[in-house]
Length: 187
Image (cartoon, rainbow, N blue to C red):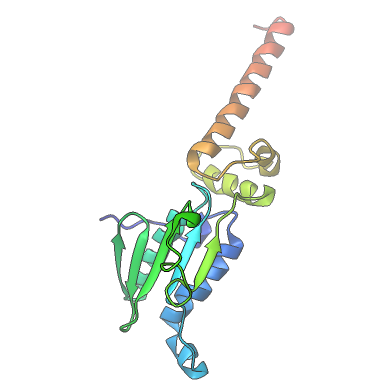
């Protein structure tokens, strides 16, 4: 199985989700003594939920990467269910588009203690996502990503959504250039 080269810097529009995931997964793995000193149990499980393409699976890959760095074993079960085995405790990370279809017994406190919503990104989040994807492309560096983000108000941040915005914008610019050349007699 290939290791993903995914870091928190590769994810745009999910600042709150990153903080929550670090609090629920990384802190208990890296600093279990904090929970012991407080006399509390760390969260046992996390449910990531939201529309398709909002980053749930990407976050699962990042958690797997983090657990590898923490020398914690991690197995991928099914498509979006992961079990992390740190120091005898079992941690469950689940991702779904449809939390309403899950059995309430499965997602009750004590099994999945935290639920993290992945909603569609806002304007700033979409601009950040566009900027991240543009790093892999040969584009001008003075692009107004906030203006491009306005062109995709319901975009999830998936690469194909972003690519569609870039292609649409490029086609519109090419059309304008051709029209200008034809009207000015230079074509």
